[in-house]
Image (cartoon, rainbow, N blue to C red; front, side, top):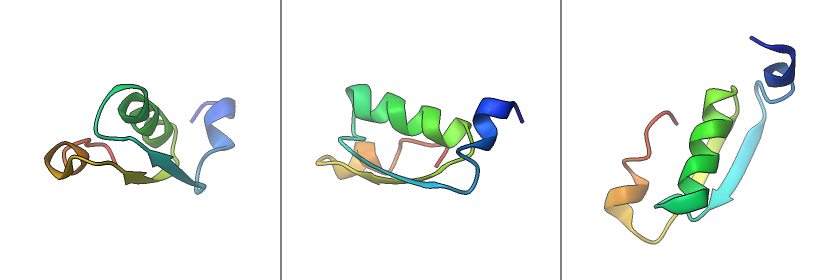
Length: 53
């Protein structure tokens, strides 16, 4: 894990708007860097399908 990623390992990040756009991209990036992501979105089908979380 890269040094910058170690800061997020084990941390919990809450993101609104994970159904699409910036919220979805942010959720994926935080998850890829080792954070546990709690995502909230209006569209259940898309929110449940973000992946990587």
